[in-house]
Amino acid sequence: MTGRAIPILLSSMLKLQNCHRNWVMEESGGDMISSLPEEILFYIISLLPFESAIQTIFLAKRWRLLWSKALVQHGTKEEASAAVSRFLTNFNEHNPTGNIRKFQFHFGKDSVLSTIIAPNNKLYVVFSAEKQEIPRQFGLELELTPQNLIHKPNIRFFFIKTLNLSSINYLSKEIVSSIVSCFQFLENLKISRCDGLRSLCIDSNAKLQELTIFDCLQLRSILIKSSKLRTLRYRGLLPWFWPENHYNLEDAMLDFSQGPGYCGFQSCDFDPVLLTIKNAEILTLCKWNFEALICPSLSSLISDFQFYNLKQLWWIDSSSEGYNFDSLISFLKLCPSLEYLFITIDPESYCLESTATCSRQAGKHTKLGNLKVVKLEGFTNQEDEIEFSKNLQEIITVDPLILASSDGICWRKLVIFSQSHQSERQSVGNTVLATQESKSPYQLVNEVNYKKELLPKHAHMCL
Image (cartoon, rainbow, N blue to C red):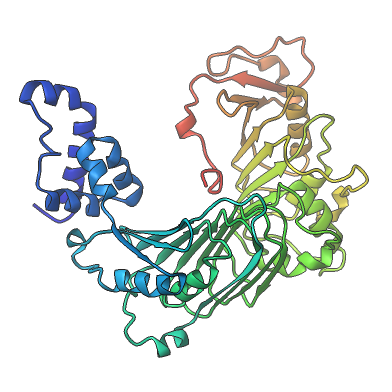
């Protein structure tokens, strides 16, 4: 049996066990897979993607016991970094079935550091501590530079390529800084749900290519020093954002739908970020962000400023009542290569004062000739959906697929008829269009054949 066939066979065995567990128990009097030796079960887990492997805990008690096994140690906060280093150093990435993947280190009062070594060179580090009503604020500095290893000759856990840090607090910041400094070949870093994190500085002249920062609600400033970063994904309050030396981002998620994180923000503060995302192919942006920070800067930048490479755009807005399309149309004029447009109306998203508007003249008079799909989600009435489609016709030279949904479940197709074909309206899909007496060339059609899993999705919507 080939190496490629083994994980496919084992994955099929797991699916078979999950679907026919009751039949197996009744007919054979036992669970055949779960009765295998522990070494083989660990081998099965090691061959599966982590997202699939973790789901094995739902198969049977035996699988849950495998995941509950962990190396547990107790000590002081000062000993935590060295303990994690020993755990990682002793892990044999060439023989993962012979290792315990989970490590817990208890320190201080009710503080626990938990790590899981996942397949594909991933490491998950989660901190837990006694909850406080007002978390103590702190700053975090992470250095991912090879020279840090000069004074750490015994560190050899270079196999970690992806690191997920969660729930860092003021007690664990030094531990994190010490651990991260050893990951010379780290390519993907994710930081999430860190209460009290006020400032973040990341210095990487090594291999860091992807950075994700999610839901750190007290974060007010971010400094990024990296020359190789290609993906930057952020969700939370708008911080003071200063990227250095990387103007080649391909993937940028700037979800500032929660609003600004500090007072007195100015459009010039955002100029370094604007230049950083200029060449992105995938982008998430909020309407208020464009109106307050990007639109005012366009007049001061060179006249031919455009997002030349942008293919996918997710535009997040706050309301659709009396919807004003000027800002969106203005931004679309800056995106000549756009292929997929996703518009989400989120009532909880931050909204600027009504006096802050953006003229359609902010963008160049660019026609979109590559637009393939437009998805409208969350509009409260069909009139706004149709009105947007009319505005869109002014700046496109193609006939994209336009889908609309108020709940993200039931999708309708917008069909556009030219004036010369008004009398040729026929049934589309499974629903007959409006009668010929209707004067509007735009009709929304119920399409029961659209399967949600087959609909196009923006790369950031599943994060």
